[in-house]
Length: 387
Ligand code: T4K
Image 1 (cartoon, rainbow, N blue to C red):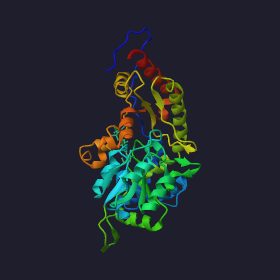
Image 2 (image 1 turned 180 degrees about the vertical axis):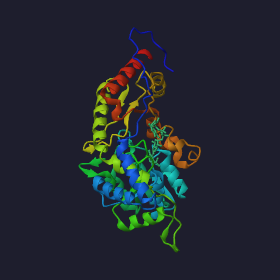
Image 3 (image 1 turned 30 degrees about the horizontal axis):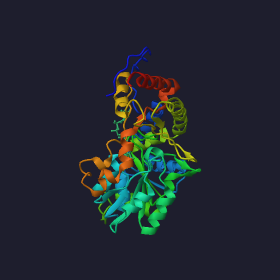
Image 4 (image 1 turned 120 degrees about the horizontal axis):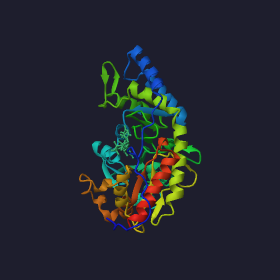
């Protein structure tokens, strides 16, 4: 840990309550209770209920996509996409992601092959992707990490050249647009997560988005145990159904998403204006033309900073501020991955460095501008004292 310097600067007061990296968006309880009353009356709890179908339609409209299959988590969405596309062999992916991406590949019998990331955009480096391709490669699995879109055009060109499928993990990219176009329209399939910690949530849940009606039908079949009718099952499926209580929450939350995103814009702006001046600190920014999903407010604390990322993370805790080091450690350093040849840190120098630098700061509307300023005061104080 960095040495403590004596200083006359007055320590900011700790928050009275824990300040987490995020808080779930929740509708007015009366609105949700009214929706529950309908569920109680219908006595229809899951298996393609009325609210499930209504939420699918509402999300297609909201996100401007033709087809979308609701599922019970982003992770199951990934597995369904891989199975529906009948993938086997190797898939080139990023190590800077949630364990979900790599676990889903592994559960589907696919071997993840890690490629390094772009040092600024933090998504897959297309040149590294191309170098990772072997005769066994069947897919590229890109992650729009922190809502930053992958280099879609370049990945598409590589996929066409090598006849590969492209699946995007857009767990962080609800509402992300590039020049006005929804990022989730790219690739053969894109998955979304509606976990409690996401901008739009159904407590647990997710979706698979595709432009291909047949693929949607296959996913709908697979998510319901492969059941075609009462006596016909021709493929092994899983239970990845979203239930009515989750769909009701989603319907009630949908109108709240845009105001929440705007409120988060203001908080992110405060962080970027106040923290960018600190030595060795930068705010991760969206490329030009990208509409930010505002899921995470990410700073990078580099070697040039007097306080390391890990020290800053620890020193925030006594102030009741619980930032998160998403995604440290890298997936390539997990015990079940590190023996893969592509997991060697010499193959992933950028990702290994970035994983030591990133810190997600609290970002949710309830924090307000005052809360964001208070967190900046605390960080400035830590920089002043611990150097
Ligand atoms: N792909 C990517 C790139 C992902 O990031 C994820 C999920 C997935 C795929 C898979 O999607 P899902 O299968 O999960 O739908 C959280 C989430 O559990 C996980 O969904 C998410 N990524 C990951 C980045 O973050 P944890 O272990 O950090 O969550 P937890 O419980 O520590 O929550 C973080 C903070 O949020 C807490 O400190 C407090 C707050 N919180 C959390 C919950 C659950 C609340 O205030 N209320 C809550 O109900 O994984």
